[in-house]
Image 1: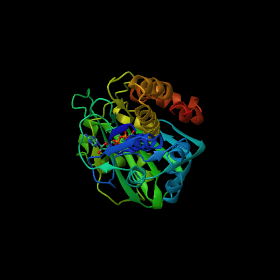
Image 2 (image 1 turned 90 degrees about the vertical axis):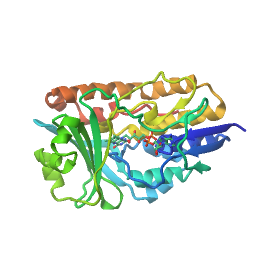
Image 3 (image 1 turned 180 degrees about the horizontal axis):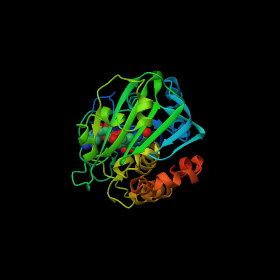
Image 4 (image 1 turned 90 degrees about the horizontal axis):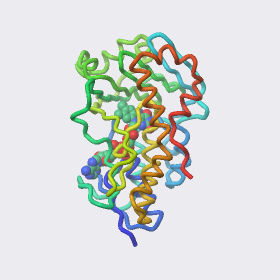
Length: 321
Ligand SMILES: Cc1cc2nc3c(=O)[nH]c(=O)nc-3n(C[C@H](O)[C@H](O)[C@H](O)COP(=O)(O)OP(=O)(O)OC[C@H]3O[C@@H](n4cnc5c(N)ncnc54)[C@H](O)[C@@H]3O)c2cc1C
């Protein structure tokens, strides 16, 4: 029996551990934090997550947690807004619930901070990016009580992005990121930032914050699909897709499944990386392009020309066969 060690118990690491176990490996998962825990994340899951959770044996439990259902998308820019129907309903479930649920489907979890070694699956999340290029970007998130809608709303202004969407229990998640100098203007307390853009102010005014703001960063958009040949990198440790796409957890589970499979079968890491490139390359390319358009202001002018359905599907990873 093959022994597989996985570092990290987020969506990517748990997906890797469950997959390797399904293929008969003896798996050990090292996670440094105590779960459940909150995490900076938009907590938006596109419908493509359903077959992956089914494959991991976790879909029934996912539904039992009562994920919020979203059927509409609204994009707000300084000079334009766009409203469309999502091609299929999407889900909102907190990381507090989702990560706990997934790690609960793994066995032999050790609470320790592990060091990567040859042959391990490394799903330890975004690497620290102290040297990230200016303007450095930081993320923030908090849960709110108050009216919840069936719309995922994304607000783009002053180099910032903020997403507002429901999660389980009628809670609303407000999550975003922005450049350091803008966030500093509000003392890194995002309440002031929410007030500074009228459509976002109108959406969040009836809400009451129910937890302290969490922050993370600086963020590094490293998208390395030709990485370390000794270990099986998965999830954000492999590559970090732009948060506004809502594809990070999906990409993490896909690359986690791929890594767990290769590690359990003894395939060399290059097989895993080729599979990931096929699954993720287009989503990364398109999301980097949108990032450039958003930062340059071109998105304001062009957004009206692109059907919402395309925006959603172009930033999705390919389906796993
Ligand atoms: C502002 C923002 C908004 C986002 N919004 C969305 C969204 O709406 N939808 C979406 O799908 N994605 C979103 N994402 C992206 C998503 O959060 C990530 O893609 C996802 O968390 C990646 O999962 P992962 O398992 O690779 O890493 P993580 O979730 O970061 O998990 C890594 C785990 O490894 C553990 N760990 C780290 N080092 C060690 C070590 N040495 N030993 C043991 N354990 C270790 C950590 O404690 C952690 O639990 C967003 C990200 C940001 C920053």
